[in-house]
Image (tube, rainbow, N blue to C red):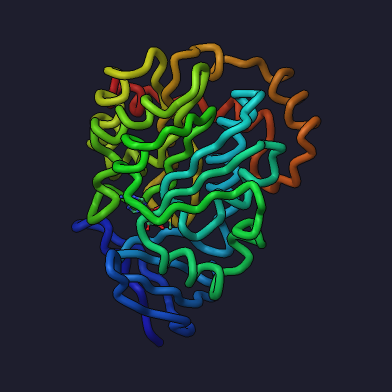
Length: 280
Ligand code: SAM
């Protein structure tokens, strides 16, 4: 039986049995593979790092989209940076927002995810509110005239093209195109294994925003413990909403969630002391 060993960390990796390789290609930007595993279903990997799986992507994508949008409460324009598999777009599109802009560097990730992982986007690439830009996210946020209430950074890890999405220049661009009262969330790695990522992002964001923090999401295929999602805004109230406020917004939105709930939303901002200590 073939196997896929994740090579994200030099000293430690998870091993998947591969029932079938569905597709493999070196795109202009990344080494892409989609394979089938008995537990996780179809799995997308880029440059040796697991990106998403059919089995557990809802946990990550629901939390990446619903936490900032429901905390904001009146988001009209949402930007997704990265997210080429379409899972984040699927969840953002469940909200009654006016416009969704998605910027991904690699058209191949989008096209191949639509073809081989159709449940990820579930038709959301056809949403008339979507503007799709094939561009580097860092260049986009530093040039666009558009302004966004919520920016979701659904990036690869800071290796290869994704490294640009962890730089002070990128975060400054996010600040530049964030509307007043807006919030930015960023995929920030697993603190147990990627402590520097959390520390560096915190320092860079703290220069730019009044309120910076993280919330935690346990995604089984991002091995090593809970994933940290960076949170940056000038409005400290956004991450201090009471349960009742979030619950009322959730009920109003009628979201068909499997992992996200208002209680999990509020609780996800509680950090173990050892994680707070990384940036405290
Ligand atoms: N959820 C995944 C994770 O946590 O690793 C990320 C999934 S998504 C497939 C990551 C996307 O980021 C890919 O589609 C990739 O093409 C895109 N990407 C990487 N670097 C980028 C950049 N500089 N600008 C825009 N998109 C980028």
